[in-house]
Image 1 (tube, one colour):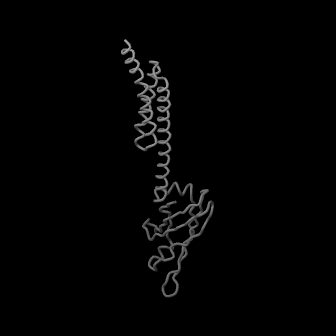
Image 2 (cartoon, rainbow, N blue to C red):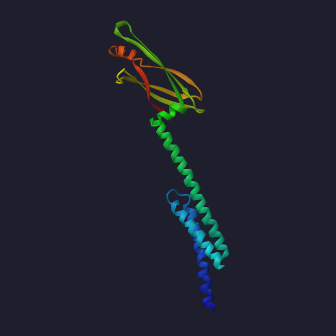
Image 3 (cartoon, rainbow, N blue to C red):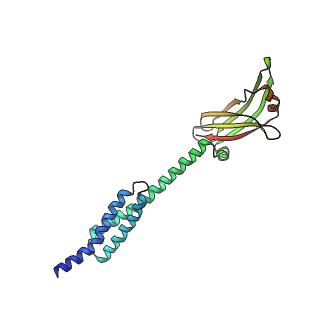
Length: 205
């Protein structure tokens, strides 16, 4: 009779032990990327086994410990996964900005690019004296660098030439002027004088 009671008591306390073990494993795995997916489910199981143990009124101390560890496993897993997801999204956005994939968004929110009038004339020895002044203004509240590609197109939309503005470490709200298209061939001079200038791509870092 005593053996039967002892076996029954051990079976009841088995749920509490399982809850505690699962809770310990879950809390350990909850800090590890990818593996914490398993920690979430182990935490859920720990909570379930803990409540079963409460219902059977066995090993209350182990059941409480298992319940706490199980809940912590779930909370830590969800919190860290959310934090990691936000970090990955930020890295992805920064990468897109750096390679010019967010040109329209950057132009609308982070930088203003003002294109002046092209000036060009044929000087001594057939050399072309030319420039196009571009004003770049950092619209953010942080120091940013911008790499801007600008094209010259003719009336038919065909590209004549391209050049780049590299605005490094502009302070918040700071503006700077840049002269581009300073090297133009005499053959392209006439076309450049009547060209339309467009921003093709902007990268920010």
